Amino acid sequence: MKKRKAINFDLSTEELKKHFGDTREPYSQIKNFMLENGFEHRQYSGYASIEVMSDRQIAKIARKLNDKFAWISSCIQEFDVTDIGEQYSLSHIFKDNQTLSQTKNLQKDSKQEQIKTMQEAVKKASQNLKPKDKSKDLDR
Image (tube, rainbow, N blue to C red; front, top):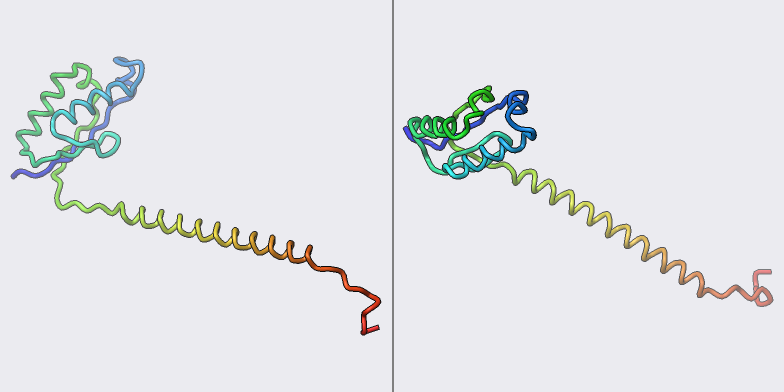
């Protein structure tokens, strides 16, 4: 049965260093390969197929990956394929929380501005007050 597929893999850093000076290069090569073969990059070494695929198509892509990169067979520690069922994004929860946090910061800034404005008004008003003429003070 065809479903969208998730591929997650783990490469040996020690083995990669035997083939590359910088381990970012092989990950970049794999990323380009996966993007060219109908996948989107989800996270780190995780990819999800854009369209539904059969197990046979996935096996073909894995063989193609192995054929294209001679170094990969000595570096692969895991190469997992998962059928993607219903998928729900909950990223809005984090975005809503970020918006709430930003709103609280704006409210805090607004209150601080209001306090500053009031302090300036009090200072200005106190400067405009004239001292009492003590000779006219009736309470004495």
